[in-house]
Length: 165
Picture 1 (tube, rainbow, N blue to C red):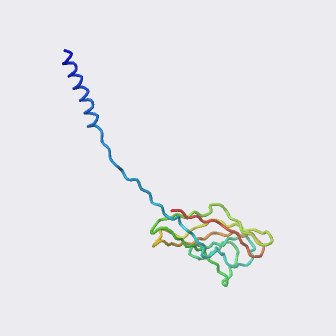
Picture 2: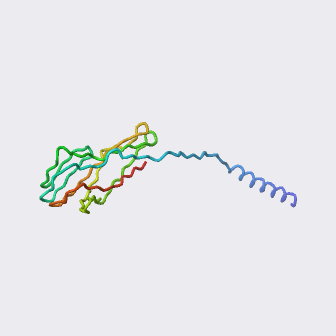
Picture 3: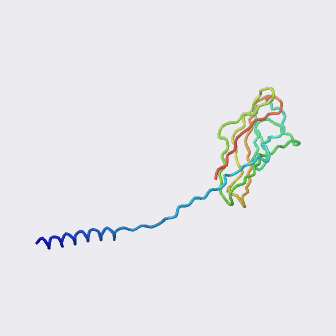
């Protein structure tokens, strides 16, 4: 019986080793990454609402991304100083798609004497926003608010535009 017990124990041990070796398997998997250059944006033209005559009532001047200027209220815009939408060029990777982030709050422009006007409702030209051969472009318009008897002068300010892949 001792001999049969040893044989039985040896068979059980061999079966245990055999099944665990047969139940194991492995595979090598590749790991990769693709590093691309981030988008680079350049301002080609500033946002310019053009020239206008001091309003007698509150008014707005709207510059579309296409460069069309319209007004509300009692304001006369000058045909000799029509202004233009802001314009940007973009460089990056191949045919990457991108998103544009514009201000969602009012930006203030001021003149030399401290008078101010609000600029709001920023809007970019229609997409899709995708690079072609590593380059792209878009334009931005907005709405300028004028108070009745707005102070005269040249008004300036800045706003931020962000581009992401």
